[in-house]
Length: 192
Image 1 (spheres, rainbow, N blue to C red):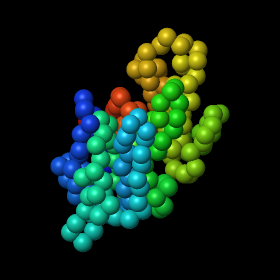
Image 2: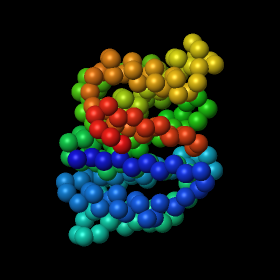
Image 3: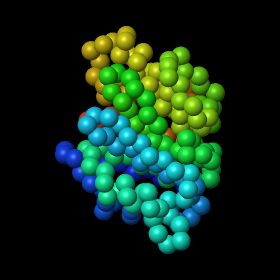
Image 4: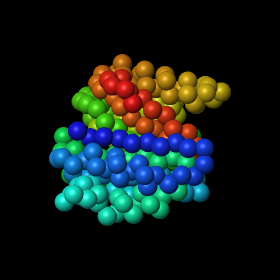
């Protein structure tokens, strides 16, 4: 199964103890990975379509990143064959700029109908995988809510966006949404 990881700290942190342990969970049937983090408020992402764990060791690039990342917010995703992605561009995290921040998004779960969603905003994420549509839907909802009600708190706007998404596109959602200073987590089918 695909899996996601997130770390949020009050200061810049190196996850060299935790990311390799997370990667070891990818011993079976994994076909890609991605790590997103922030350096000086800029989102940085590295992705690979290669297995995160092969021949009894964690992928060299994944290990290197685990050692050198120094960030308050870190998110990661290990892909499985069922997630639909076969190229590194399909792997998470995805990144979009809106509301004055660069956001990172990772997701696991099963949501079928949202693949048909088409954003009214730019940019549109290139990958044709449903987690990209989920991220676009959340972005679009947040922009619309904040435009209509500019003094709405970000948390309240996100709660409304999630309610709208689950009502419009029922499914199993488990995701992390982050910018350089805040990390949101949501799951409607198992504990985080």
